Image (spheres, helix red, strand yellow):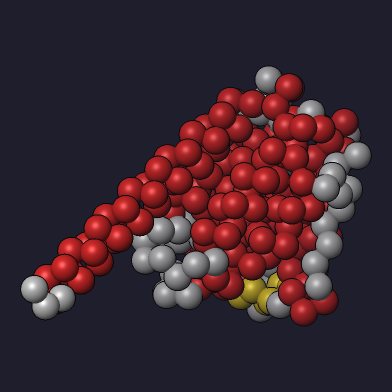
Length: 213
């Protein structure tokens, strides 16, 4: 049984994701490790960590930062594909820490919106979260994570939004949010293909101009 399924079957044992994030933002400790995040998210840790790292990749980060946040995504998403019940990360990744001060700056901007979505979100379109559905979400998030670890200027926003939507849908078991995530993933792929096509054409044109007649 996957972590998301456990959460859906035992909702009374889990705080809303927004409440957990608010607790994290109010920590007095200067830093929090990835392992501590895993413990706080409990049985839905895979989905919650995908959401947090996906959300981090949507922020205006310095070049190369999405590679750092994309690595945990690349490690976590395939675990949905194989139906893992709990997340596994190397000790080196689990021991990495995040600044609580930085989280305190960014999370309060996200939490109110998250709370509004949680208020109207409900389990629906259960077919999207069956054994095949969860693995499909994991497969799509894996592909998006591969994009996020690449140093593509401005190319992180749509893939990161898609990962965040799909992982949040997994936590909430909300098929409408999952469909939104898939739509963002398709849009992201289309934009990247178009950009690659334009770059290739420009490169070919430049070669033609520079080549001797």
